[in-house]
Amino acid sequence: MTTAPNTLFKITRKTDGISAAERERIVANPGFGRAFTDHMVVITYTEGRGWHSPEIMPRQPLVLDPAASVLHYAQEIFEGMKAYRAADGGILLFRPEANARRFRKSAERMAMADLPEDLFLEAVSQLVSIDRDWVPAPEVGTLYIRPFMIATEAALGVKPASEFKFIVIACAAGEYFSKESATVSVWVEENAVRASHGGTGTAKCGGNYAASLTAQMEGKAHGCQQVLFLDAQERRWLEEMGGMNVMMVMEDGTLLTPPLDGGTILHGITRDSLLTLARDQGLTVREERYAIDQLYSDAASGKLKEVFACGTAAVVTPIGTFKSAHGECTIGDGQTAGPITSRLRQGLCDIQFGRAPDPHEWVKRVL
Ligand SMILES: *Cc1c(COP(=O)(O)O)cnc(C)c1O
Image 1 (cartoon, rainbow, N blue to C red):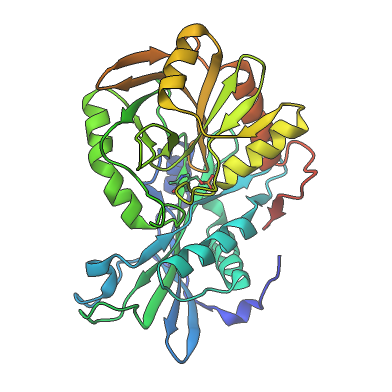
Image 2 (cartoon, rainbow, N blue to C red):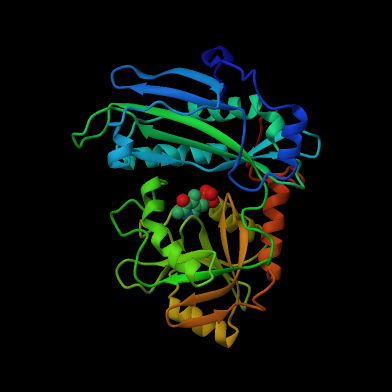
């Protein structure tokens, strides 16, 4: 990893933090998305001047002009990544340069400032380093890291902003889904779509998530934890979940996932890593369109053995049931992860936590 000198960042340490004992209590049972660390990184962009004034400071509320573009026109992008505690106490990142690259792509799509990849990586490393005590033990979870960029220019005219802030926050995180059951149930959304060709589906932007929430509410009302979106044109082809990609395991051991070439599916780093691991494990991998009606009939005939969702936050989460306005279908026994899902999840986690060889050089040690 390229590292700029530490002196680049102005560092203000939190002095009135909670006690070490209190932090240890939180980090031992963190939940997801609430146990925020002590610090944040803020880097400012001004047109004509570029990125400047990198700072690490105590985590605190932002001061924004009420006319800031992000509040009106949603110029916002983000990333999601994790730091993993290795058995020797060290701290590892997983393919962080892939997040840095995707962040630039998202920025380009949303007409936002281009953040150099080494600055992204340095900011993440600096935050992990200063908040290292917030990284849970491997049996508890991970440090979830949220880099994001917002348009801060105060201007109501519709145009790309000339001022941005890049910010990194983090939280200690346990399992994303509560463990009442090993599987989740998924609502098949037949009306709202997440992305359409030419839209923003391949950018990791907040707006995509806002647009997915009514479907999530509807799913929840039907007892489902997640939503599966279909393609915008025919409402027929599987695309992905609101924040995770989807994969199927067929009877003959083939791993199948929707292809990225339609320009509507987010290029998940977990997706890419699992396809690589599956090939390493000798599975046949196919990136092909798969119709929802086919899913129902293959589930009924037994041709479809396992389905799972994958992404940084939820890692690999087996799907037990699909529900739609038209009915319900069960995958496998509906309750437990299938053998290939389990093997892929284990293989990925073993690399991420530094327990297994890393032939693709995905892991970067921070500390
Ligand atoms: C972040 C995200 C994913 C998962 O990407 P990872 O890089 O694997 O974390 C999948 N779909 C959407 C819509 C996302 O925003």
